[in-house]
Length: 205
Image 1 (cartoon, one colour):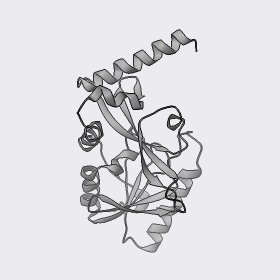
Image 2 (cartoon, rainbow, N blue to C red; image 1 turned 90 degrees about the vertical axis):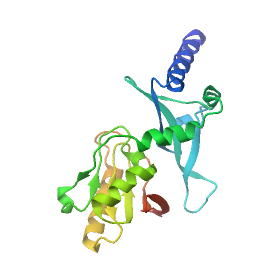
Image 3 (tube, rainbow, N blue to C red; image 1 turned 30 degrees about the vertical axis):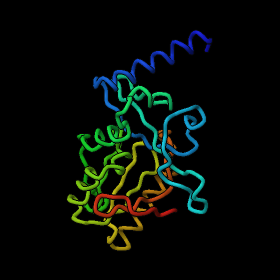
Image 4 (cartoon, helix red, strand yellow; image 1 turned 60 degrees about the vertical axis):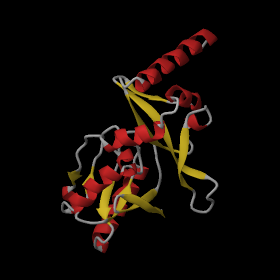
């Protein structure tokens, strides 16, 4: 990419971000592994989960992206200035709360597990109190384990499920973590512990 091409590319990103500022597009949080190249290239992000044995080392980060008809455009740190005094983090979170996506009962788990696979922000639903409240209500349980091994994969199970069902849940999680069929990016080999809509802990696998 020539200097002129790079300048044009960055200008186009700025235009997209400005459309989010103006309300034409929406901003969302997007989970990434800490190895995501954007971390080293100036992307705007927060640490969401740290390594089990070293809390100073990130494992999962939360980036921010504008959803456009052509895909996601990620914010760099400089784009915070575009929003002025507005809280872009809260705006992204609010947009996630308002996201209209279905949860599906998984037949292979006797309809005791939820999924929301293959949609753009399926993983990020685990960040939303509103989305997790829906999962609590569907599963009639206030304590959940959430699997988000790869982009586009999410499974949710009641924490108090019987051992056979939990073992099956872990088996599917590991399969999704190791499956390269669709080449969708890794997020983390962990389970999120959700209680009453909020993340209360991490199970490292």
